[in-house]
Image (cartoon, rainbow, N blue to C red; front, side):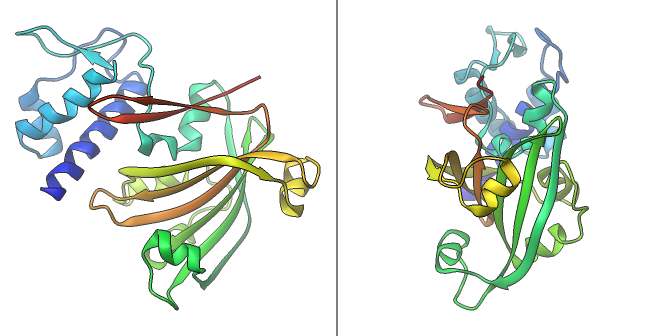
Length: 248
C-alpha cells in the first residue's frame, strides 16, 4: 500500500512538470488513462488517483466521457517541484545560477541524523551553495545529503543550475518534501555572499525531501533575501501544495 501511494505521487509530480513546461499546451488534452498507465508502468487505478489530485488542485478538468483538459495557468506546484530552484527561476523568465562555496564530507550532526534517519557516526555531504536569479544573489543554500546521495552530488559541476534535475537523470527522484518556514538572522557567511548586513532578517525555508519510497535524500536550510520570494499554501481534501512566488 505504501509503495502504491508513493507511485501515484510520483505520477502527479511528473504530470505537473510536463504541464508546467507546456508539454500539453494550454487547453490541451492529456493522454488517455490507458496511455498514461503504460507510460508510467502503473495500474489505471494509480493513474486515476493521480488525476484526481490534479483535478482537485485546479490543474486539469474533465467532463464525463472526455479526456482531462489542462486549465489555463495551473496555479499550484507540487511539494517536490518546490525543491527545484532552477525550474522556478525559469518560470519567471530569469536565468538560474548557482555556485558551490564550500562542501565537505563529515559526520552528521544530531539534527541531520534525525531528519535523514541516520545512525550516530554516519556521514553526510554538506554543501554551502549561493543561488542567483540572472546574476543577482538571492539565497544561501545549506544542504546535507546522505552518503549515497552525496557521492552523486560531489561529482556534479560546482556551477550546476539544478542538482535535482541531475539526480533525476541518474534515476533518483524527489517525490515528497516537508517544509518549515520561519525568520532567521543573517550570519557572517550570509552577509558576505548575499550582500546584506550581519543580523539582518532572512526568510528561511527548511526542507526534508524524500524519494518515492519515502527514504530521505536531503535536509536543506535555504535563506532568502527579503523581498525576493514569498510562499503560499493551498490545502484540499486531495492534497496540499506549497507555491513559491517572487515578490517586489
